[in-house]
Length: 107
Image (cartoon, rainbow, N blue to C red; front, side, top):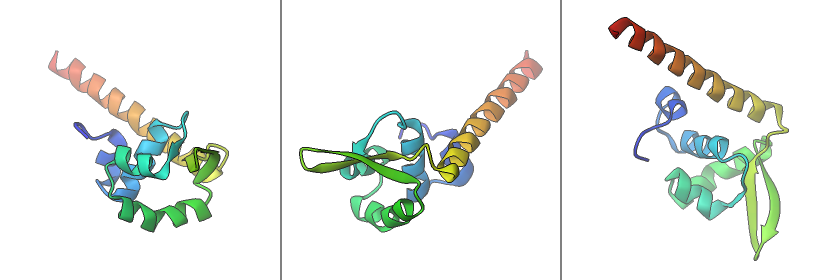
């Protein structure tokens, strides 16, 4: 990642946070678990350690199987996932407002 997202800057640069960050920003698409690891810049073995927790809590959901690979995305129907997305949106708005205020002060 060239520049960290607001979500990662707020909660820290940890594998689970990176995974959630990628899934939030890519919520309109589904990916095989290997692509999620690659795009989140998380070691595949590390992703496999946290993945069961995400599945058990319903944060992620499998959407379909394509060429033998199961595809996943964040479960936008899950109330916890909805709150995580809402929190991310809130953080982005807060950051934008703060940046705008700082811009006005320096102008």
